[in-house]
Length: 302
Image (tube, rainbow, N blue to C red; front, top):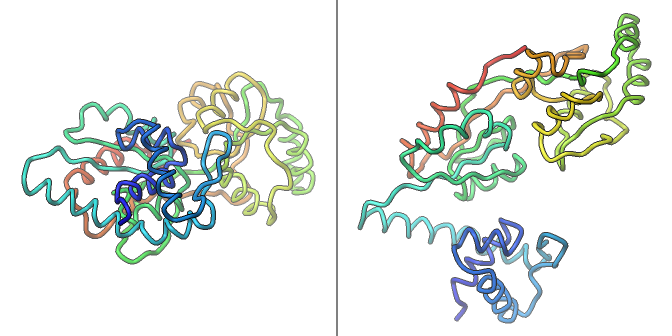
């Protein structure tokens, strides 16, 4: 009979992307994780992951196995939680999915004061919403709304998506071109500038460009940095352009470290939602997180 711990380890590797992260999540050694995976691969007769630099990518057999076991494993984990709650008073552990920058801005300073355990998940919004559906996370803060049975969304904030420039960016030509109301000349000037983007996620730039020019940007950012806060820090000391939410750079704009260059022919804004399951084991803890975020997150900026 297959060892259930092998499957639990496989599921964690699949979701975390590496043996190191899986070992930290499961509180076991990395050699133990490696042994579980090799034992499972030997049992099923297939390689489940491709070994790549810094991560493991699931093979087609790995994807098939994950889809087959993820719901049963989640149900077993929930049963384990319920049994523990019925037999002893454990501290609740709540998992929240959100973007890293939003966490730093609003929730990070409150973490040490929470009367329950908190686990943060940082990844793309579609992946977070899938994890919410599969009971991997308990609450997601998202600008995307994907209608799914059993998931409810509640709007709580709105962000303006704006084009910002570094403090030292020479914007005189742009302001002159803008008065001509000529989109082609605006695009030409944009392409002559240095752009900042973030690793694996430049949705704000695509949406802003499509809304204002009815096309997708046909260029890549010159500098790809880890997150939006890195963009803001870079623009505070060097020329360049980026499209980002206003609430993530409000203080820098107020100080004059960066400048609002353009809001677009058609201003773009995003509603932020709380996404949660209708039935949850942690309604009080989730409500506490929502209250903090509603208090800390701006409803409008700049």
